[in-house]
Length: 435
Image (cartoon, rainbow, N blue to C red; front, side, top):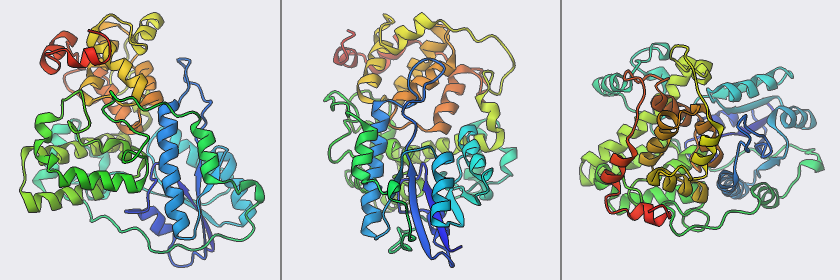
């Protein structure tokens, strides 16, 4: 391979980058790192933008950091304003690139994107790298993945399966090819600022007040956050505090960086294991491993079931899926009259973040109390969440709706009981103006 386009997708980092290392293998004389900006004008079937202001801002911050890191290696990031299916074939022709290399994403739209490139004649090599565990090392072929997470966890731990060590960031990269057309030579900072638009103002009430140091979107901020989280000994209390609703430290907050790929799960676990070696294991540190495995499980479900996870019935049987547009509007705008749910939806809209506990409560209320289509709720979360992850978002909504792999057929959370358990003083509801 003489000239290679490396297409960054949800892997906006240099550390632990098997795909990038493959792109720089022997024979690659020139490398052109590329990001294709998402279509900010794409609208969901429910009438709102696919990617909202919070996600655009966070994603742009991650790309800006990546651009700086690549500039330091004298192999700058090229920003493409058009979708990959349009931009990459034209760019490859212009620079006489032989191949495109990128991470594999096992979700229908992302796979279709790759196939559209191949249909133009491009040689596209995809490498799987977003999970903690390598699917090839699982105790069974991924097509025989256990139907429930508990069995998956039991068997993984029984055989003592561990991920490979994270790769270091490269110290050098091949240079750009000659002849990149002038129309592609955008200033990364300007292009990303235009894409992000007017960033929402930071909200002091937020459990993840992103947008200013240290909570920026890129790799450097991700690694710094991981380091300080461990340095303050917070893993030991994680299991006890993980259902909190207010503040930064009740949970690890790794997910926003994991979602864009600014942080590798293998890097996170390797440093957690180092923490345990020094301070001992605890229920809290184990629970972080447990939740990284849940993240893996949703990925492996996609490898096993593919597009079936995106049917209205999911993995379940055919049955009616009611939807009440007025109730959905009340839910997403925080005007249902249910104080805990409304507070949660106001936090999500104002900040792009929501605790895992409240994601479950809000999703349950939409599906089981308001009798609305679970896919509308999944799309609203996709619009807002800084840590939107196609695998986890789809998996969790299917789980609550009873259309995934949960043998109990869905989960309904009583919002009154949840409030009395997790917000007994009403502090969270007062914070968001519903109590």
